Length: 413
Length: 145
Image (cartoon, rainbow over all chains, first blue to last red; front, top):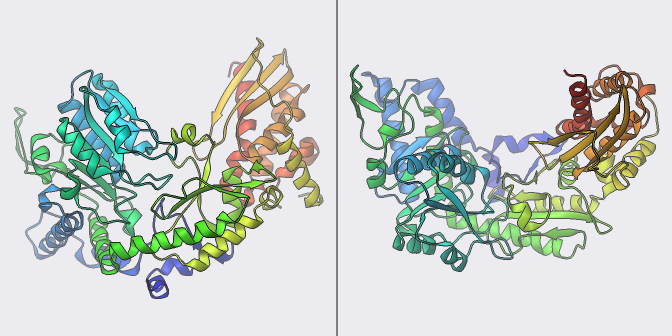
């Protein structure tokens, strides 16, 4: 990985934070944007300009070509059978809400069960909790193993005849473990279940093949993979998307309607894209895919694991740091810092790191049920991406060694 | 802003974090109670207050909290005990003014002046005020507001 060359593509890396060079290690929350992505967004505003699918003039046709070109790019990126299986939306959270509402309202019956687990992000579990309530369905949880992982064995135990859906994150945003999605999907389909996968934390880092995984629905967000905020993708198998009715209605998704209430929707995927979409966001996502593909997911993932193992080796020697996910094969490192045997609240550690120019996340990371599994009120999370370098990990570890309770409070003076 | 030795102020916060005062909830009757859960961090505390007429007889708290919210709530609990509601509201208003870097009467705040610079870490202002807001709400509630 030619990190030095790559870093030149990210203009934001030249800024400072707390008057120190920026060390950005919160890539699980969002990622920084390279110049080609910024250029694609700006080009829409300075040149392309028109709406999509609406005008009979050159500008509009250019937008259509660029927009639909990105749909094809996403289809290839996910190894979908066709770009008709790609729906643009505002991101993973919207995608998961769309699926939960459509599936609960249109496919499930009262008493049916949706399987989740206690490591899920709020965006993966809350849409089902709320949609299930309205329909009289139930949520059940796959028990996690002692490390907080989802295993095929535990999934099998949780399956019974009333379970109709399983929804889980391919990679947990707190612990970074990869769930055995392919094996789970196989068993799920043998039991007539639908498989819904939150790819927010996996899509930026590992190759995704929705056909090989054989998932029914898959979502991801552009901003976690160097793309713009406010845009993401819902992948669905064509047959399911054709069968389901959208949650939203409005302009562009319909073909014909009249005052008698007759409505003819457009074909999949456009029936799911009511109203003007974040066009510049979609174009930025296309540029992000190009950028990531040029580096290669395999190289990206291998490099992230190298960074993680570098961090693990360094903190292993330190008695003051407790790492919760040493074995997770991702760039996510979740830990707490101790001072004389007493845990320093994660937020105090994160604020201390801020004074060193280092950005990490603290708290429950939106996975509020996981605190019961880890038996700790909150954690610090450092999450690496391909533009991070070992020197930054050295800075993180040096700062963590300085992070005593006294120094964490000293930042206020 | 006062020229108090920062080491002294830091020691006040350390002391109240490590040995928080009034750090136990009660099941006794006659207490108002407020559960305060921050939406942005782990802070999740419950504050209880007992009023005797116009006077604050007792304040207690417990929960999961960072150094700043634990210490600031602990200091608040000591500061307002035995005061009238009006006196407490004046202290609370001055404390919020201090946190917002506005003019305040530091004589009213005693040990709470330790948080005069909490705004240096903008995202921690919520930690320094979460327990104080709970008491303010309970005073207002007791007044039927």
